[in-house]
Image 1 (spheres, rainbow, N blue to C red):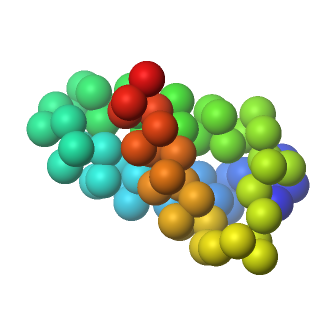
Image 2: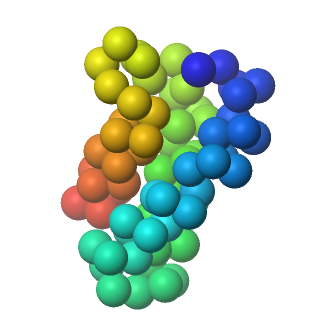
Image 3: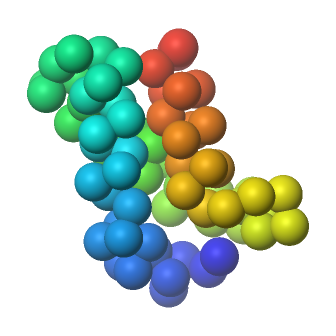
Length: 70
């Protein structure tokens, strides 16, 4: 994934990340924060995603879990 792919990724995956974060936290505000942090982290380290290791959705869910545990 490149930085130029980010707008598409954002549109396609924001709702999934937010929904997962909301179910984890039970809070819309916390889910907003986790979603923002997760997608910011993806934008800042887009070259860390390796498609051969799994789907982008799975990668984002793992990132969401990591954001929540920080």
